[in-house]
Amino acid sequence: MRRLTRCAAMLLVLLGLAPLGARAAAPSGTVTGAVRGNGTIAGLTVVASSKANSRYTGTATTDAEGAFTLSEVPLGVVQFKLYDAEHRLLGEGEGELQHDGEVLSVVLQIEPGH
Image (cartoon, rainbow, N blue to C red; front, side, top):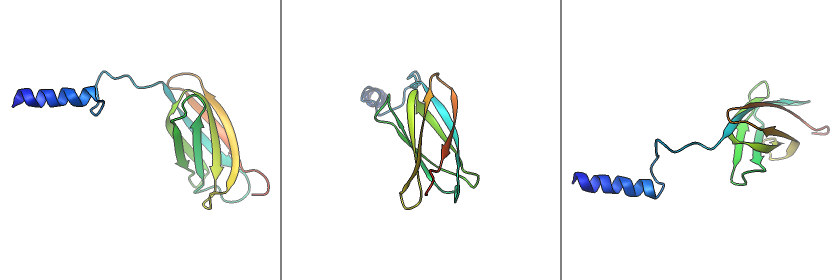
């Protein structure tokens, strides 16, 4: 029975269905940001996408001060889009994470007329 359990565990690892302690995390960083502009800045949605990793999409919601944080963002150029509760685009921005563990600070401006 013990051998069967070990074989099942190895199979899960080989299939990528179980975590490996030795598996290295992909290089990434953290984005901290703030939204500036007229109107409500709390409860807005920030959507981040990576030019280097098309599979990555991160989302965050702004707090009462318009601040947000995104963790484990892939290195490279990151594009940001800012949306209100009705999914209207309010603004856009871009930044670049260059080093593993880097913290990038961005300011997203609500475009005039929104």
